[in-house]
Length: 147
Image (cartoon, rainbow, N blue to C red; front, side, top):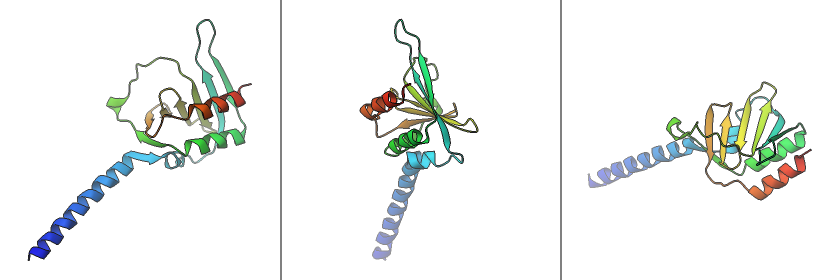
């Protein structure tokens, strides 16, 4: 009887552990899972540089599939966590370096580099949890793609 009780308690504990683990896996996922929900491939990258005192902001578009693939491969190394509405600060109007990936149906992902933030279609916010992003790689990527 005691053996059954111990086995039942062990089964309950392992079940609770698996429920907690599956919840954590759902809230944090790899960017490959995040990016795989797109049915159409991305066809453009838009870089935005914020205005610096005395100079206007700068924006340029890159359509090279190899460069888009390079950015997607870079993002595969990071995990994202979907932010809850109370965690999102929509009043933040400070300009940042950003990269927008866009597909042919105008669906987009905006990567705000300084904030380690990814915004999907201007409505779903994700935080990069194992960041910060590799700034050296990003600076080189931006410089290679600047017109």
